[in-house]
Amino acid sequence: MRFQTLLGYGAGFAALWSLIGAVAYATEPEVLAVASFAEANVFGHVVNGESNKLVVLVENKSDRDITLENIAGSFHSTEGNKLVKNITAQALKLPLIQGAKLSLPYAVHSEFKPGDVRLNLWLEHTADGQKYRVTAYDSVVTVVEPEGSIFDIKLWITYLIVLGLVGAAGYYTYLTLFPEQAKKIRKAPAVSAPVGPVTATGAGGYQEEWIPEHHLKKPKAKKTKSGTAATSGEETSGAELSGAEGRKRKGKK
Image (cartoon, rainbow, N blue to C red; front, top):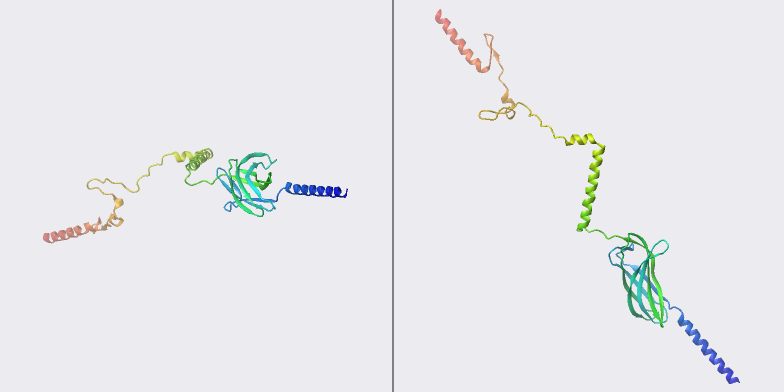
C-alpha cells in the first residue's frame, strides 16, 4: 500500500514537472528587434520612387535558439490607423542562437501622396515550432517627393511653362491697370530733328557742325576815314587807295 502511494506521488511529480516545462516553453521567447533609418536619412523621410533603407537590429535574449523567418510591414493612415498598403515581406530563414545579435538590412518603397503616414515593421521568428511576431518599428514618417536634378528636362519644361503663364498674367494685368501708358509705349518714336544748320555734303560742300568754332568766327569790321566800315582784309586796300589819291592831287597842283 505504501509502495503504491509512493508510486502515485512519483507519477504526479513527473506530470507536474512536464507541465511546468511545457508552460515554460509555451511562453514567448524574449527577442528584441529595433529598426532605424540609415544615417543619411536623419529625419526619417520616405522618398517616393526610391529604396528607403533601414537597419533592423535583432537580439535573442531568451535561453532558446530561434529561427528568423521574415521582416514585413505596412503603411497606415495617421487618423484611425486605417491600412493603406502592405509592404512586401523579406524572407530570412536565419538561425539565431540564444544571446546572439544580428543586424539585417531592409528597404521600403513608397508611391503615396506627400504627407504623414504611420509605418509599422515587424519581425517574425519561430521557436520550438511556434511562430511569434515582434514589432521592430511603429512611428509616423513623412512621405516626400525626390529632389529634382538640374538635368531633368521635364522639370525645366515645367519651369518654362510656369514662367510663361506668370509673364502673360503680369502683362495682362499691366494692360488692365495702365492702359494709357501701354498705348504710349506702342507708338513709334518720333524722328528727332538735326541739331544745327545742315548743308549739302556734295562736291565743294561742308557741314559747319564739324568745323571748330574759332574757325567759324568772322573778322570784325573797322571804320575808315571815309566813314565806311571795312574788314581787316579791306583795310590794306583802302590805305593803298588813299595813297594813290594823294599823289594825284599833288600832280594837279
